Image (cartoon, rainbow, N blue to C red; front, side, top):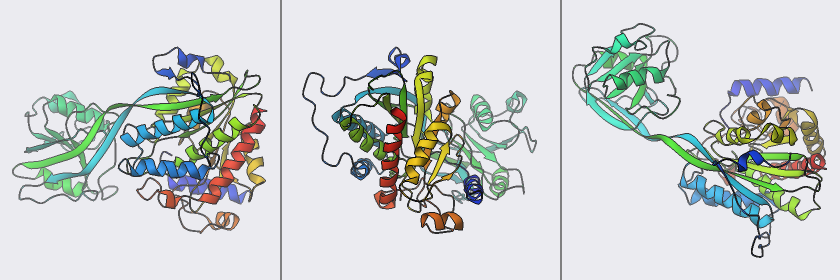
Length: 463
């Protein structure tokens, strides 16, 4: 799940507790999507492995993928590609028709903390005094610092600020009214070897600002520094060193989309989960849990009598980088395809260790989810997660959406702790977006409960 402000999530949870289809023909016509033959075409399909209807079996497989690929399953990495292959193969074995969609996205991986060295050898402290801007290029520079635009709020925003800039120097410019990317591109065009963005003096946080250049494209290293470090750099006599160890480029990954044709097939019920982790960890709860639940459901649904409506499962890539996979899928749907989708159900983080069971969305889909969850334990609370997961592109396209969520870094309230036997004052998932989001971090009973409930809800919706 993409990061959502913890204060917003906590406030939402407290407020809630206090008050308590058809096929995607448009895709097949584009070069961005390829269609694979259903399992068994031209040969006898293998039977699903023992335990394939159990989500924990798939959680273990995803954990193994991460362990074999640098402890990450991030989009655009070998672990991400291995996750795509695992999902596609298990769906085919279960008897679903499977296709993949190529998705281009901006990739950024900072492999080591930035290094900025003052004349005399003192290094700025990474995190406390210097940070790399997201989508900065990797590289290094060793040159004198030139302050551009003085202390004006619009420093570095206009072409006049750069006319006399000496090529090969390091540009230092104050954070202000125009975007970081605009300053960086102007500095690059003027011949700067690196760019340092400084905070205004004595205002705001003492640490350097976190920020982004928006997308790959700038070819020089770009860092931000705290106000005190900026003053030291501006007064430096001699060469300053700047080094960024990062990869910033466009990459391609794949959505995996599977369908089980219904008896009628005029309408479609969808469920989805994102298949990528953050670069910093294996992402077993976020969102291996959603993937595992859907893979278990794929086996169960294929073994049951066919429902009236077609069921489509989507496994979305590059969610952590901006919902790129689900946005691409929705963009490729025709208006008719969108109208045929009866509902989309999103599963993102459904096995948090200190879980607070929550649903979001509206209409028949959320009603079906809540009914099924109510039958299996304490009733979930209602929440809202804005655009923080893959339901958002469907919702913007007019598709009815619903979802299940068991919490991220927000702290659990006393009311929620009593309802769900959680620990008050602790995060729902202390390993959110961290290396410790491993199999040991996942809540096995909650995963089982959510999987069983979504199974019942999808059958109800699909008829």
